Length: 239
Image (cartoon, rainbow, N blue to C red; front, side, top):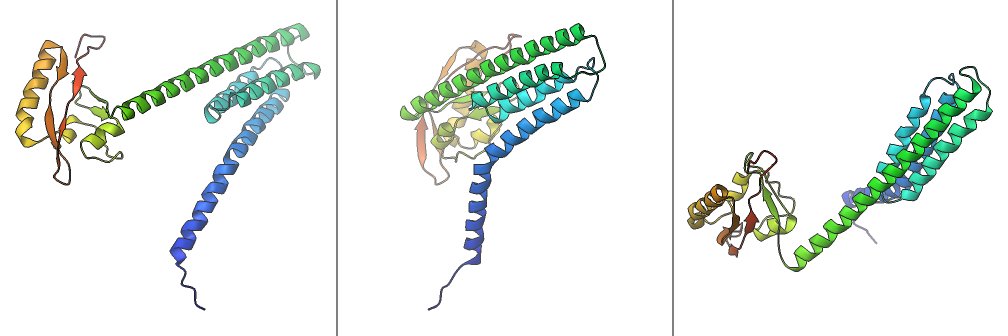
């Protein structure tokens, strides 16, 4: 009995297994590293005079937790609570430096700072999650209606489009066309001049834009599109 095994397939399977294992361990490793960083800052704080504001270093693990665990705000709360507890724990250890009342006042001030920053980061995370949910709902609505979105900077000529819009002109979602000229090659040659005139007229009158034109897919298929847009101005009244 002979088995014909492909070594490349075996290596690919091993790499996939390793990637899954790393992806499983990554949250635990980053959480351990963040908590270890908080502990290291605590020992640095204890080894310095009371007057030095090493407590500002606690802001870094807070920011790190807010970025690495955006979808797990409870971990940010735990890091914030640990920072506050360690700052207050320093009050029980006698060290040379400022007078007792000044050291207490200084630490209480930083407790308030750490707590305020934690609350602000939690609010920022909630806003980001809300925006992501809205974008996801908008994407679902656009896909259900078979609509694509696009945006053009008329001054720089840079253009961005959604994945659905790219599919409408026969392009893959990975296509990177950052300038309007990259998209003109997809327009049917018989519609280019008319479309350019209509866009120039809309820019001159600063009105809404609506027309129909054909696009040619890579396989030669011709499709009709109905784009709609609106000319807007920036803060300096430029279109």
